[in-house]
Amino acid sequence: MTAPTFHYSRIVDLSRPLVPSEEQHPWVRYEAQIDSIVSDPETAPASGRWYVVTQIGMSGHAGTHVEAPLHAVENGAAVGELPVEQFFGEAAILDLSNVPWSMPVERLRLEEAAAQAGGIQAGDIVFIYFGWDRRAATEGGGPPYPTPDALEWLVDPGIKLLGIDSPGLEVPGSRELINHHILFDRGIPLIESLAHLEDLRENRVYVFAQPLPVLGTDAIPLRVLAFEGNVS
Image (cartoon, rainbow, N blue to C red; front, side, top):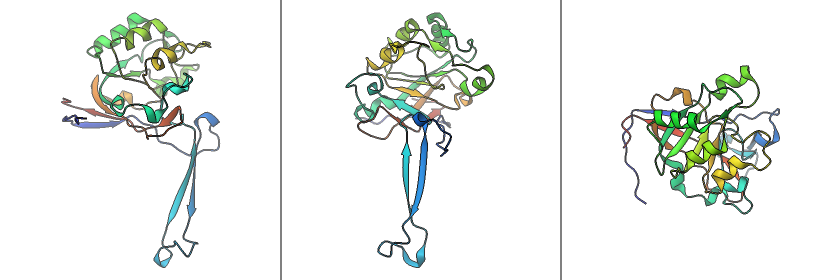
């Protein structure tokens, strides 16, 4: 694999920090326990210095995370089975922060946002900015969501990864999980709960978003970095 080369002037971290809390829902929980091993004379460092091991328990859907096809497709690919090249490359940033809250995003509105970002090309990563952090606390309910027709149009050019700043993009009340299947049946992973998309100054950036190579899981938190400025 040939490594890409690019120049950049700015990095924006699009990830949410994971903070332990007893009040978290089981689906998004993150727990950390620090165990000291200084008390074990066989492994303690000299002079009783600090020496610990952290035990971590968490949901694969904690914080900013990626969902693999296994999330909604029986026998679909787990996170660790996805090609690494799906998680880095040029990304188009679609600004949908002014669409009505909790309402469907029709194809025409998605086309307009894509045009403002310079269009969607084969092999692109696409991030959608709904303004979740700014709007959720005051507007209530769920975020906007693409209609299946709009999402079909978005993935049709051959995008390789989709990300959103909200906790989901499914059609409310849909037991068929139609939007998930539009992505996962094509092998397109979904990143949920991105952060700081409003800090981006450009509508095309270079993204690096590698998850851990974990097998047997439908989702895992990941670090998402956007590089701006003269990307090539």
